[in-house]
Length: 468
Image 1 (cartoon, rainbow, N blue to C red):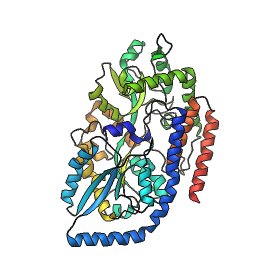
Image 2 (image 1 turned 90 degrees about the horizontal axis):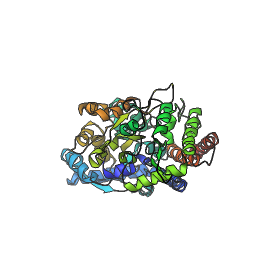
Image 3 (image 1 turned 90 degrees about the vertical axis):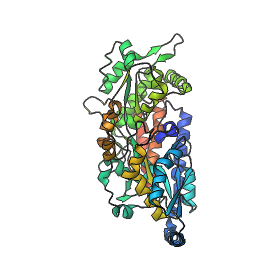
């Protein structure tokens, strides 16, 4: 899953350093999506009349011999539409001559992975039949009645939960009902610059295995130029995929308990946020931001400039190799965990959903069943420019022998136990809150414990509001 659009906006999570204003703007945007979803749920209550209309239209279409056309919305630019049609849609249409697929590009809203246009279409009773949808939003949207319950279709299809990685299937299920089929995934690891390690007197073949070792090694890589600005940096915790979510898990924290209650102020989460704030203070947030801004102007991922010692990022940036051809030595290893803990990772990715109110629900399911299960997944994964994609299905990854690719293997090895973000009506709200307090903490605008206690209060209030 690497076209240019995906790499630019992928999973709501690719930033170097976000200024406070930008983070607040993103928080307001996603919160706006959550509140606007309330109107969408009222539109979903008309399923009985919609279903009747659907059956009539479908019967008319079949009776006349005319194929049914389903509208498929997707948020990816670049060559995605051309490649997906050629490799997957055309095959589907040949196998299902009664169904035609109209592909429609509808971009996501702002820095979010959601689409206000999709919400508006659902609320207005005129949604697309299928949408490519960020999996972590499923719980939030399903809770508000914006997605079609696919459980009955899945039970009759032979699809099993074990066909997918455990965490990815869990993201598609809300209150024991299936609302999507997982498709495509990603995971995180640590990229490290062996050349900078060697110059700093470190063993380039022994990357840090704990956060404490990472701190010590990173300190030796930091270097300033004559103007007092950093010419190279060892590590910035919030760079690229170093979100607070990421660091909390690396510190042994958790975002929900055994009963699925959200736990943003877990003690280890507090330690992780405090650690991030300590980096900002020790290395000067202004100087770090200046470095990040300069890297952003290059148009390259900061790591490939050769001026970053260690960074946490996803398997998709392996695709940058052919484009940037780095001249330094580098490696990939699991993200370090705090002392006494095992390295972990987390996975994001996409799915196929049928928005509530689809006029061609049965045909939409036929398409979702094809593209989101083994045949369609394999067709897409075998395309010429698949690069370092990881699919949501272990059997497909095994068939493609992805584990034989050395650098990709590090990411693939973490998939069976990869964390995923909580499936909750407040899932998107919690993500926004973590970005908000991350920015406050690294800018010295709040104590970690107090900030996360506030997040807990806000999340509980959001859940209470949604339950009314």
